Amino acid sequence: MEHTALVDVYDRLSSTSSNNEKRDVVAEAFAESDAHLWRLVVLVRGRLFPAHDRRELGVSSRLTLEAVLTATGAPEDEVRERWRQTGDLGDAAAWAVENGGQQTLFSETLTVGRVHDGLRELADFEGDGSQGRRVDALAGLVSVATPDEARYVVRTALGHMRVGVGEGTIRDAIAVAFLDGGDDAVSAVERAYQVTNDFAVVAETARDGGRDALAELDVELFRPIQSMLAEKAESLAEGLADAAADGRVRYEYKYDGIRIQVHVGGDDVRLFTRRLEDVTAQFPDVVRAMERGVTAENAIFDGELVGYTPETIAGDDRTPVVFQELSRRVKRESDVEATSREIPVVVHLFDCLYDGETLLDDPAAERYERLVAAFDSVEPEFDDGVAGLELATTATVSPDDPDPAAALYEEALERGHEGLMLKNPDATYQPGRRVGRLLKLKPTMEPLDVVVVRAKYSEGRRSELLGRLYLACYDAQSDELREVGRLSTGYTDDELRALTDRLESLATTRDGRLVEVDPEVVLEVEYEEIQSSTEYDSGYALRFPRFLGVREDLGPADADTLERVDSLFDAQ
Ligand code: AMP
Image (cartoon, rainbow, N blue to C red; front, side, top):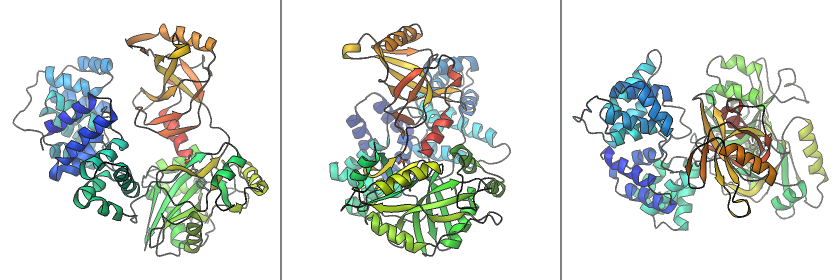
C-alpha cells in the first residue's frame, strides 16, 4: 500500500470533526487494507508500539527539526518560523519539502511498510552516535516524501497525529469494518482490546475469525490487562451503599503508591504499571519477593506497590514515602539495586485475575479467595534486597453498620495512606472500566497551577464573558505548553469579567467565539481527578475543574509541569 493512500486517509480525518465520519473513514481503510492491516492500525493513531512495549522511538522535536533541515536544505529560521506560526512541526516539514530547494528523490515511492518499519527502526538505535543515526534515518524518509507525506511522517515520529483519532474511533472502526458495527460488535471489540491491549491483534482477529474468535482472545500471561478503575464515592455512607451486594461490602486501605500488575509463570516474573509499562527491571526486590512467596504455578495479581522509609520498613508502623519519591524507582535505569535500598517497597495485593484459568468473570469474593490461596506473605528483608509481599488490609462490613469502615478510613489516613477502597463482592473484573462497583474514598486532590492558552465566550447569561478557559501545563522537556482541560465553573461574574478584560488584552487570533491568547495568566484550579484523554495534547484531561483563583505571582513557566500531572495521574 502506498503511503499517499494513507495520507489521503489522514486528510479526510482532519477535514471532519464528526466522530461517525472519522470512524467510517478508518473502517473503510481497514476493510481495504489486506496484509498491511496491522501496520495501518498502528499508523492511524501514530502509536508505533503497544503501551506495554518499553521501546520508544527516542525522537525529540529538536532531532526531528534537524532531520527536516538535513533532508530539505530549507533555511532553519524559516522552518522555525513556520513551526512557531502553526505550532506544528509537521506543517513546517511540509513547507520545507515544498520550498527547501532540495530536489525530492522521486526515485523511491514511500509505502506504508517503509514508513512504519523505518520509524520503528529508530527505537533500535543504541549507544554512541545513535542520535545521529536517528537523524539520518528520519531524514532518509523525509527526503523521499512529498510535502503532504512529510507532514505525517514527522507527526508520526513525534506521536502527535492531529487527526482526532482516539482509541474509541479505532474500536468502532474495527467493529464496522469486520463485524456488523452494532453495539454488541463494539462491546466485543472493546472487551478483546481490554484483555490484549493491542488493536493490531484485535483487528486481525476480527477480520480473520469474526466475533467468535474475538471472544476467544483471553488473558495471556505476560501480556498486561487494563486495570479496573474506581469511581469516587462522595461519602462513606454513600460508598458503602453503592458497593454493597447482599448486604456486604469489602473495604480496604487505599494505599498511596503505584498500581502494579504482577505476572508469574513458572520461573518468570513480570511487573506492569497501570499504564502497562513493563517495570520488571526496576524492581528486582519485588521479583525476589514473588519468587519466594507465590505458590501458584501461574498467576496474575493486581496490587499496590508502596515505598516506605528504610528505618520503618521492618516494623509494624511503617511510614510511606511520598509518591514522587517512589516514582524515582520507576524511572531508574541504572543502580537499581542501590535505589531499592534507599526506597524499599512492599506490594499489597488485592486481586487475582488468573491462576491457571482466567478469573475476570468471577465475582470479586471468589477472586479474593483464589488470591489468598495463591501466595504466602513475605517479610521485607532490607539487607537481602527482598521486598515485602502481603494482602492489602481489608475487612467486610454491612453498610448498616459503617463504624468499622470509618475506623479503618481514619487509620489508613493516619498511617499516611490515601483513604479507603470500597468493593462490591459480586463484581466481575472489568478491565479499563470505571463501572461504579469499585469506589474510592479520599480527601480532594491537590490543586494545580495552569496557564490559560485559549478562551471561548460562554452561551446564555454569560455570553459577553470568556467563560470557557482552556488550561495548559508546562512541558519542560519540549518547552511547550500542553492543554489539560477546559474550565467553566467556580468563578463569580465579577471575577470572570476581570478575567475576560485581561484575556482580551492578550488575544492573538480569533476564530468565531474562540480567542487564542498569549499564555500569561496562571490560574489555580481544583478538580476531581485526572483522566487520560486524546482530546488534549498533554494526553490528560482534568475532570470537573473549578476555579480557585488567579496566581498573580506566577508566570507561565512556573505553571505545574506535565511531569507533575503525570505523577498525580499515576498516584490517583
Ligand atoms: P483510580 O485510579 O481513580 O481508579 O483509583 C484507584 C487506584 O487506587 C488504583 O489504581 C490503585 O493504584 C490504588 N489503590 C490503592 N489501594 C488499593 C486497593 N486496596 N484496591 C484497589 N486499588 C487501590
